[in-house]
Length: 211
Image 1 (cartoon, rainbow, N blue to C red):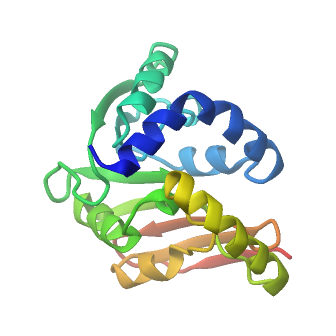
Image 2: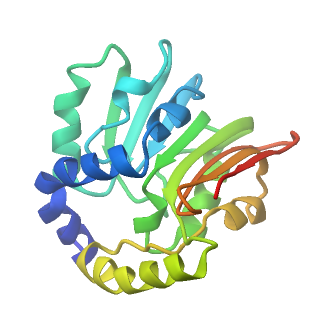
């Protein structure tokens, strides 16, 4: 077990309480936006404590992956409350234990900020998606406002050391570099939050940018 695993296992009992505040203030509606677009065989990378489970539409077949055993233990209690067929697996986002073209949708919410190498994780998401499959992301990102970004960099000095959580990453360019076509992106909360819907294929992009 790595130090990163131990950090998240220790944090698991506090996660729901802490993230609940930020969901109300910063990420409101984000989980719903992402999960409502999922269809078919769905892989959720960094499923955590299972906070997305209530927001998936009927009929999806969900596989949830996380590297923290303690987080998955909490997620299993939420599985009992959902009508969906859910399989939970402990694994690494940078080495997904699935064959090529296994899923119709890959979801990752507030997860790529904590993966050691997000570029590798995104490439793995591309690999396991079927042609035409959809990638759906929600994350906090580095703001385009310089004063806010400076505060994020200072905060990052603490959060990276505590749980490996980066404040200033932005997955979108890496999504495009991995071969996805972005069909919709929304940047919110002074540029600190981004929602992305992309396909393993070609569709036009609709961008929504707020101040």
